[in-house]
Amino acid sequence: MFLRDPVMTTFADVLHQAVGLYERGHMDEAVAGFKRALRIDPKSASALNALGLCLANTGKAAEALAHLQRAIALKPDYAEAYLNLGLAYRRNLSFKLWGYGD
Image (tube, rainbow, N blue to C red):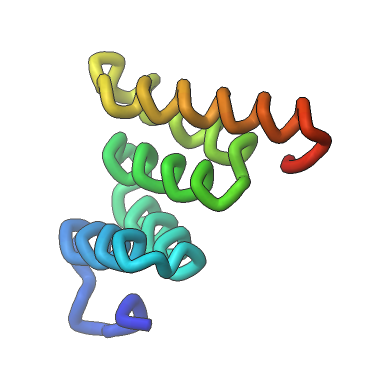
């Protein structure tokens, strides 16, 4: 989608675009966008949190956990990442209890 635009190279632009894709329900493109943002700034707690949230909301809770835990390790006072981590754990447990998911 828009993520291939060569003009859009700053971290903020890429992250903003990925958030927009997520908000419009384009989850695969949003995941790709958050991963692109992390290639620009691998230590961005906000991009890790957003990627984790996106993955958790697409049924990939186990993968989401790693990104959310890394966000918290980078920014231990990141309340939103703790909330999303809890939600991802809950989704992961629910999927496992019902025999679904990763």
